[in-house]
Image (cartoon, rainbow, N blue to C red; front, top):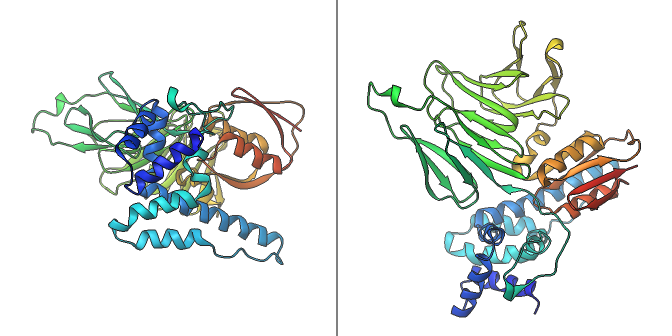
Length: 412
């Protein structure tokens, strides 16, 4: 049995609670031989993650067939296979059934198998369990840096259970699932001046993502190569945060305390509802706000015009503050937030738009040789796929590429 098969067998036994003592020791050696191994083990033994990934596989297949049938009506629909059945069964069963169900799901969800992740991700093993080298590049994960108002920097990852830090009257609590939340401890009246006056900043690298619950209960998903700055407690007449990059917000309702998102030098949003996505990368040609629920008022930076109000299933597009706000009706709202749900999605996108998303999530450099075709593309790729799988999908669209290290060369 090869090293890959061996670790796969051990994890499967772990899920079924069948490990012998010496096997448990062997698995521990592999887990703690590298941080990447530990991250993969935690991910593959998280029942919520397993159920979520299986649901993604099912939904992705359903959406793909739906689009194919729109273009080829006579195409027969796929049979409803075991994936949906098992996902529903898993959700309905009591907790005591879920470990063996999770083990079965590891085996059935092909792209989520431990060695599909481990050995295509080029994860190092211990000397006892050496794996063949691969040139593949793994997808991004839950990685971020938290900069506190006092100047302390905290590296964040998947395994964060418990207290991370204290900032004034606020505790920062970590969770195993790649997220932190702020918990107000309460302040003695008259001591508000003792609170740190600077901002906290949560920043993700290229190839990173993270989740955050702000002090007011607002939930934020931060995409790769992004940052969000905010106070440890919202004091004063408003709740203001500063965004760079991309984030999805579910804002806690508080009519007496307006929530505002500032995008430095480009725009400001006043939130009158809850669910929306903001894509504001410096290398993108436009700042795009997509509203799913509620109301958002958008004003370009430096503009003296009245803010533009957008409604659910509308997008506000700011290309240049001098030209105001363009409102697009009925956009593909699900596409704008697909990254939050584990899918790199694109619709009516050119190759450069697609590759900007790929570059940020896989932390690679992209260059182009020759004049790129004007073709537009649509589709979706699971964000847990390795780079080689993404490039194979792109090749189906007749996109030519070569990969050297972390550099991708695209040619007509």
